[in-house]
Structures are given as structure tokens and as C-alpha cells.
Image 1 (tube, rainbow, N blue to C red):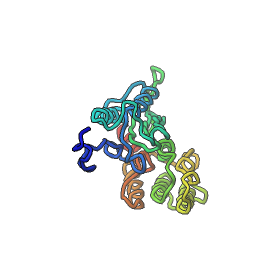
Image 2: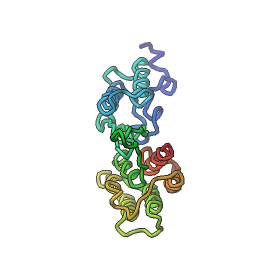
Image 3: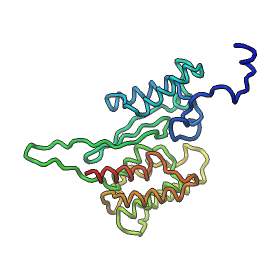
Image 4: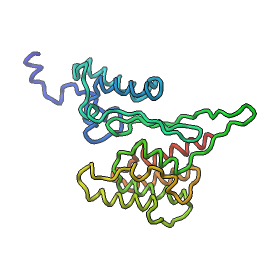
Length: 257
């Protein structure tokens, strides 16, 4: 390397493509460069769960970023980001009637979530039917796709709105989902250590059985839940794979039935 190159100002040097350049992520993950081994892990996860690497999916995006970083000499061929290396990548499927919700995550942060319809096979003389996804089922999907997220005020507000719309009642049931979520948000606001915080999965697992009533998710329901989550988030954004995103995904799928 020449002396001129060595003295080149840091902000003029080529910068690696980081996770925040590719996905809507935050924290330590956002500043980590995407490495070839990060992409390889996501490709393996997609192939294991989905049977193939998804065209235009997270693995493909990560591979493109990693290739550019490696060609520029900014990461090595065996390069692996610290956060992804420690916390890993996951691809999960949540089965709901007539479809499945697929969530792909890096270091516990959802980078992609989408819904796929599945054929419901019945006897030849019967008609194939698809059941609409309920709000409770959408909340259970959020427990899987964003289950590691500590519950905050935006989650509590979204869960409250979802419960009100599912049950048709403005009365908050003691010990119900909304009350439990608000208690969790209050607890987490006073706790510093991440491991001591109550997570979404702790509140939303088995959500359907915890609701006094349930109904199919509609676009109107989704708009209400999204609005509640946005109003209570300082950065005015919804959580990828979270409560609002899952109810919205359910509503979109129900409209296609």
C-alpha cells in the first residue's frame, strides 16, 4: 500500500455495505458489514426450511452485498459479522389456515416477512376451502416472528387495539393479553438488563386461547393496530414481523380469499 493510500482520509475510503444499508435493522447489527459467511448461513437456512434459496430474498440480498464487500477488499472470504456469528440467522414458518407466514431474521431482528398461500387438499367430492386468519392467530404469528423483542409501549398499545377488535369490547380483561402486555411494558421500562426483560413471545404465545373472543382480521382492524403501534413509537415505525405487521399480513391474505 502506498503512503498516499495510507494517509487517505477515513471518510474518503470506500465503506463496506452494512446491514442497515440492506435491511431495516437497528442496534449493533445495523453497523456490521455483511460478510460472505453471513450470506452462506442465510442461504443454508432458506434451503433447509423452504427447500431453496428465495429469488430476491434476504439470502440473495446478503450474497450481493457480501460479494461487493469482498471484491472491494473490505471483508475476507471467510468474513462473518460479529453479531450474526454470535446470535445466528433463522427462517421460521407459522402455519395458519390456508397459508403460512414466513419470517427471516438475523441476530433476532426480522429482515423479511411474507405470506404464502397453501393448497388445502380434501376428498375429490369436497370443495377446497380456506379459513380466514383471525386476529388471535396473527398475534401468535408475531410471537414466533418477533418473539425475542422486549415488550415496549408500542407493542402494548398494538396488542390492546388487537384485543379490542378481536373481542368487540372496550373492556380490558384483568389478566388478559392487553393487561399482560401493559404490565410487561411497564416492567421493561424499569429494567436495564436485556435478559431480565419480558419478551413478546412471553405475552403472545397461545394468544388465541387467551382472548375472550376472536374474529377474522380485516383491513380496518389492521389499520387500527398499525395506527396504535405507530402512535406509541417515538420513531413512528412499526416493528418488522411484530404485532401490527402480523395483523396487516393476515388482513391482506384474508382479502385474497
